[in-house]
Length: 184
Image 1 (cartoon, helix red, strand yellow):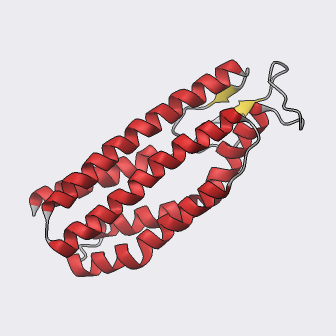
Image 2 (cartoon, one colour):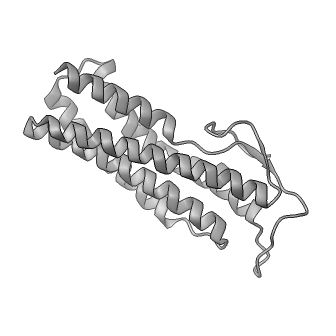
Image 3 (cartoon, rainbow, N blue to C red):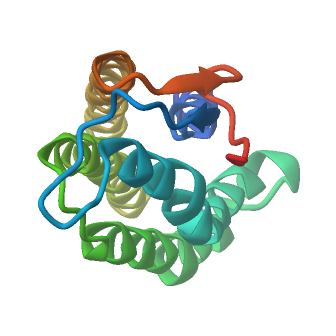
């Protein structure tokens, strides 16, 4: 039981810190402009500072429900019900909205795809925890831990790609990656 609690604590911390956007940015004259007149900078700013924050409440609810087990000393059955009935539903809503965003530039489409891959793995990790509780099988917790690690890899790739897109298009990031600050 202690191994399960430790794993769940690690997963909770990883989930809390892995999803965040970049900081503020400024558009410069060197940005690429598409045929439709959309700049990469404008789409990066839209994705990071408007779109992701607009759906964050669904993800935050799922994480909050996930963490409730430790903060409120819930029993396993109560926690299972909360994860099954609310957390997964919220995370599925988050993923649906994340996939629905449409971008013109290939750079931002790539960023979105990397972000989605990371989010899908986190959602699947929650499902593994549900299955592990239901089946009293710790192998599901091991699988969940692997998915969280893979999710963190995709998130690191996303952040690296974001830095590259910003550098290639003369976009200045104000603040640090991993914080949710608004653009000016």
